[in-house]
Length: 242
Length: 242
DNA sequence: TCAAAAGTGTTACTGATACACCCATGT
DNA sequence: ACATGGGTGTATCAGTAACACTTTTGA
Image (cartoon, rainbow over all chains, first blue to last red; front, side, top):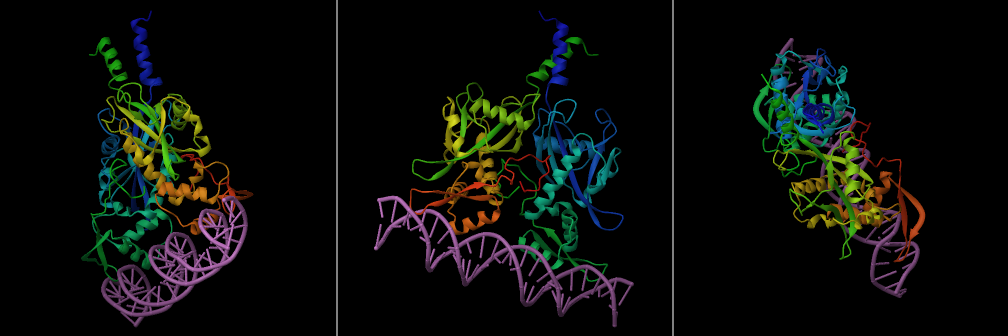
């Protein structure tokens, strides 16, 4: 016969070692200007304050609450750990290798874009730092590999979709936008051809304002809000590649 | 202060109503010849034998075991419920809406391709049926929407990747392959242009054998195994769009 | 007036498509 | 012989890339 104490320890075991828990993490990308003057992809990480990997940097995230959807959990944990509210959020992949954590954790990972003018929020926070994507330190868990995959997705999606505006403020020049693409793709783009491509895509609205200060003034553009930015997931009607 | 009894009831609640469980399901595609003679995308579903949705058809799947990876769980549950071992398997999406099941379930959904010559296995099984993808009945949970998304992904991926061979036997004619593409994409393809495209893709190896029986014999091809078929997931090195 | 970025025009190339045409076999 | 699908050749078109060129400003 099973005693009360045994029941308790069984339940406890199930909660810790034996049960699978669901976590949600997010890879947040932004493009910032480095000391050397050129634009680079950067992302925030948070310092872990408990084992495993105590002291290491990790992707922002947290446990999935029973009363919230995966998307909501991504937004919430992001706000709680970094204070950030990204302009674009899309599910990346579910990671579930048995040994990726000492206890069994399945992580639903999202990736997000942050507008350049929204970055400041997280700068105030203790335990949050930004690294250039090509100079990341060792991260906790399998987070380095996850970031690599998210980068691959970002580069890939930027090729056929027009989401790079999720990284810029309301108004921007074509040079600003081209700089973002160049930072993501890691190569120079022809200004003339780039202009025609984005103009023909229909996602840009020209304004009557210009940015002055250096050489010939450049026209400012804003995004055509008709083209959907946030990814509503597969359950929403949607015919854009993902 | 918290008493012992309260601790126990908290743990128990967490195990039943309060806990989130992780399930793994798979959308399995094959192409079969319908009564009318043309090829069509079809998929197997299994009859539910308990609530919720008792008696309805549902995607094959099961609970994630604590000791297996997500990929392994997809393969295992597939074999257990349908006896099938697909030639291609890739993670589709993690579904986690709060109300998609009476209890909280996060489903990691995979999609798979099955070679035409491997279909028979599941035909023997009770509780497994095949439906044409465009004539599905109402399925349990949100499975109809999941199938729609998987179909979208299949059509999409078939456009830029050469995975349709995952639906054919070892040797096949170009007409066989074209028929598969036509069934997936829902439109006719020019035989001449189709031939050149797949020949230039480098994924096909011509054999010296021909299929005879009707008109001019057609050369049989097999797949170039150098091009990877199974999706090893983002943690493997990989530069093919997904 | 000159350097440099903004912006326009032109050409070459590539891959997709449409379709005319020849080839080889079963009936 | 002829109908039919297998297989080849070729013209057209659209999108991309390369790059010469003009425009407009700050210094």
